[in-house]
Amino acid sequence: MIVTKVLLIGVLFSGISRCATLDEHIQVYFAPEDQPLMEQIAWCESSADPNDVFSTAVNPKSGATGWFQHLPKWWDERSKKAGFEGRSIYDPEANVGVASFLYYNMDSNPRWGGASHWYPSRRCWGGK
Image 1: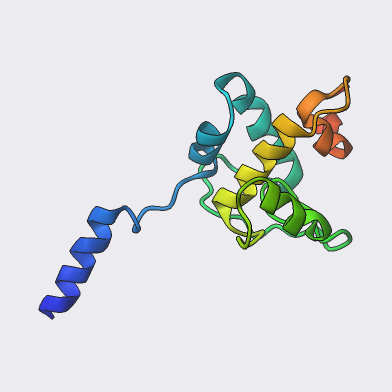
Image 2: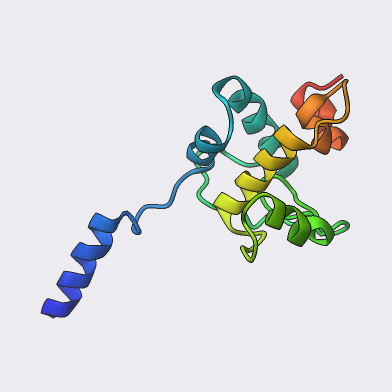
């Protein structure tokens, strides 16, 4: 019983007992001016709520996964480039971190900038 209490206290003080929300991850990985757009994109892509702590959203046709609907065929390459090599596409932090990498590093489309990765849902998040 004492060991259980010690382990529980250790977990509580380590922060492990509390998972970060989508909103908190977005605050870490995106500039303040980009955060509202990224919350909207996550909602449009996966019906994400800013208070969600994980996403099991998977598009049955494409296999796109998570808050930002990453395609599995690109996950290994992009997650490695973004510094999340070996992390699951379902990992909340990796899902947002890779989205940030795409947003800030793959913005070749002058019309939608960094959000061009999510252009299929542009009518939902406000892209014209």
